Image 1 (spheres, rainbow, N blue to C red):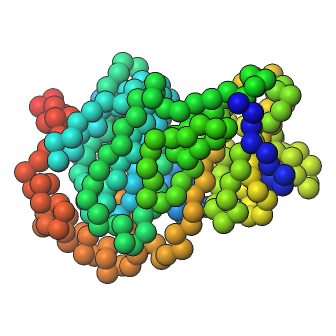
Image 2 (image 1 turned 90 degrees about the vertical axis):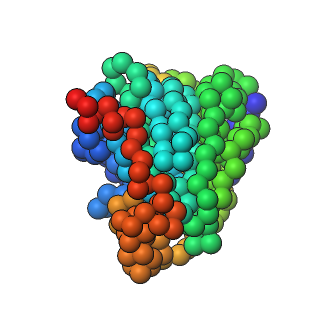
Image 3 (image 1 turned 180 degrees about the vertical axis):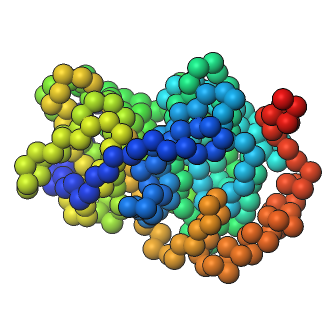
Length: 304
């Protein structure tokens, strides 16, 4: 399958290096969205590249008002929540969780050594913030993927569509989530059309991504977030290096609503945040089951 035509590539607007920081209990994350330089990139609230080894992890914690997308790169993570849902996602698997009106869950490593992955928080429009929680879990073997005719570009389609492959994930906030790999010195770039009104970014996982623009060519290394400007009909990324390039292309339709956030709670107003804190503390309005629930991971930690 050939890469799609892009006549006017979007230009690099800003770039950041995502430096390691501690999060959860003993986990290390590289946060590129949700940091002081970039609090929000509508509709994306947080983008973390995480590394965690047992007994560290992300024990029992709540969410309301958005969706979390966990994409495993290495190892495995076990998830369990107060609704009784429990599962393990391994390298290449995806979990798309809708927190909606409220969820309390834990995310803990389930494999020896270091488990690595990415977690993206996607905001929900006001009319979707209080919907019932839900999950879409896709194993690696079921993720749509394709390779260009010359073998230079491969894409895994987590959400949206690319190079003729389409994801099975249903998104309430229109979202594109693509995992591209480009061979060293590929004769053609990775190209992907993006709707003109959407915000778009690239996060480099491995290798060096090159962007050609009016100011010349910009090369960006691993763990960098690249914000792409408006204008243009898509994204074009080259690999000029001697190593494989792997990057994520994320794009989404801006919601355009006010954002009020307190940690894992994301609403539209401070009054709604106050109400959410009250709901959580009193275990009401979606948090009823939190009153008597504790994850197996937390119980095990308590026994140590």
